Amino acid sequence: MVASACSSALTAFHAAARALQLVECEGVLTAGSNLMLSPIGSRSAAMAGMTSGNGDSLRGASFTKTVS
Image (cartoon, rainbow, N blue to C red; front, top):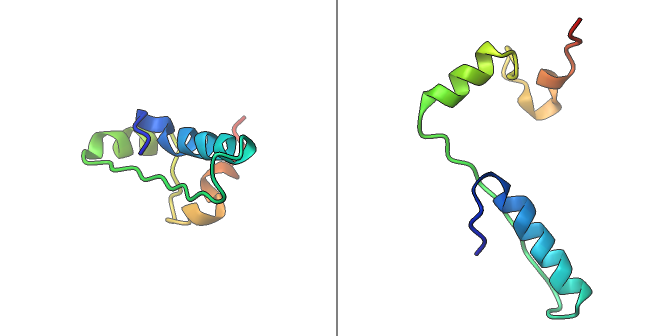
């Protein structure tokens, strides 16, 4: 288990890739999760325009808007 706040999935993936490179194991499985237990972070992201207004976040809709 890797505990490193926001970068835990990336850190776990890096550790797994390194273990494969060093032949410390034959296979790896990595996963990450994010629990947002307070609405403050979501509200701030929405106010900053960082979320999708139509709920289409799986297709990257929140990153397709051009800012002038």
